[in-house]
Length: 326
Image (cartoon, rainbow, N blue to C red; front, side):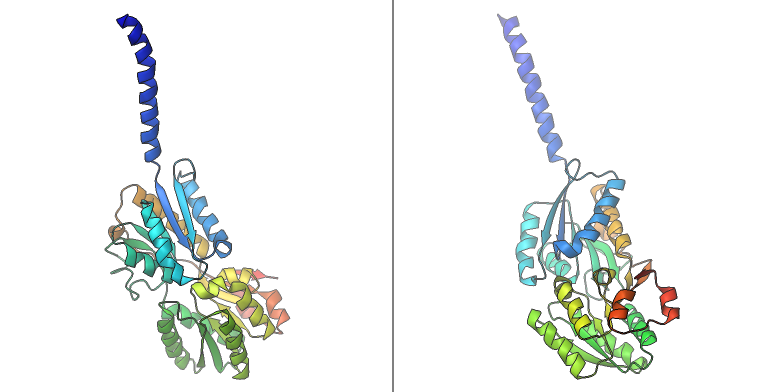
């Protein structure tokens, strides 16, 4: 009788052991949070991020889980979304942009954070230093006033008689006022006037472009940030309508029909974010992972858009372009 009971008990014990092992194995699948702006504008960036993760041996749905959240330019949603992600207890959160990193940094000092598409992270207080960021934040950060200076110089090369440039900015970005001041300082050295154009909501965008036209701006410089990303299509259409040569903060705008952009290579940045995630999942501490600045910059020009607004791009500028859309 005892032998028979043992025969029945062993398979049951074996099944229970297998079930327990499976449950333990499932718990070991790392969870990654991803906090971005909009699904449409993030699609290319997410693709680069996932491709690099795949190269590093991570397959979404198999040995990692990624929880995506988007705030669609509505910064008031960020506290809710950050809290939602933190409740999931991810091993690491990848966060896109200044608005989102500020909200997440305020929400946690423990969960590892990998930032992307932020500007001058040390100056903004996101990290203590590039070499030793300290705290729970590391990742990739863009240049500060240097990049604004280069963008203004390029506009001046395209429009030799440049005298006034409209600077479109939104107060929803925590770095916008600093960027405006930096742009004004650089512009003075180029003997160019900056026309400040503040945009708080969608309706203001049209008013800002009309103000730029009325005040005879020769060109526009669009600040980075969640607002203009969320209103990318509207911004590009207004620039075309007013026939204003416009410099955008990244190549996505140009691919969508904007005139030109000069910025760090976004694909490389998002691939780099995947590498940070890999290191953190393997035990590295964000505080000890140096923050990277862009190693590769790209000038992207949409020649079709230039022709539509009646602008001739000088051959020497075209020759330096990394990508030309015809």
